[in-house]
Amino acid sequence: MGPSRVRAVFLDLDNTLIDTAAAGRTGMLEVIKLLQSKCHYRDEAEIICHKVEIKLRKEHFPSPHTCITELRTSHWEEAIQETVGGAANRKLAEECYSLWKSTRLQHMTLAEDVKAMLTELRKEVHLLLLTNGDRQTQREKIEACACQPYFDAVVVGGEQKAEKPDPSIFYYCCDLLGVQPGDCVMVGDTLETDIQGGLSAGLKATVWINRDGRVPRSSSPVPHYTVSSVLELPSLLQRIDHKVDSSA
Image (cartoon, rainbow, N blue to C red; front, side, top):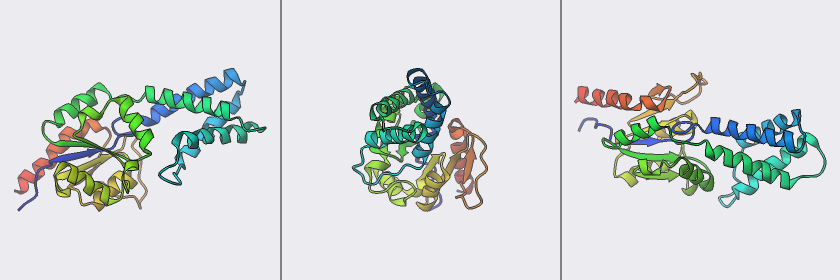
């Protein structure tokens, strides 16, 4: 039997379907205003937020039972103390975290053109949302952007035994949809998780969303396709299927 047409598409959430990075920056700007007006931290406010951004990038969860609220409030508490000194200020840290989080979630929206694209794609293929991260955090994002109705299934890495790039989570997704890895395409913005995982699991194709024209390291996984926006996906899927039809 020859190659089959695409039957399912796995889509990442953060910075693929929603602009998580921009929402996070907006949240930080609100916290800077708060710190400057309430505490009169002028230059310190930006330094505190920068420190928190670094802590978020390096974040890891010691156990599946780690409380994300406690962990991230601690990021703010540490950043404030590291910057201005003095005693730890948990109350201010809680206020900063709450403002950052609520502002970020408010700005996590699924654009109308993305909604329309997903609606049309779902008429042709199965759609599955596959996102890494802490269960509570990712479920809050999914609820905030109201994307669940556009998918046949939603899989959150933090709820599974393994996350992307482990092939097992991709096989789990295939089983959920009743498809084979060779029927599926993975779409995401992170080479080390989305693309490496799709390659390791033997999916039909991997699609890297490279919004900013980043140049990958030579050691990075190499995607089958690269696009600058998820909105290019319908025409790309047609190209992939055309290749299949031509080889049949």
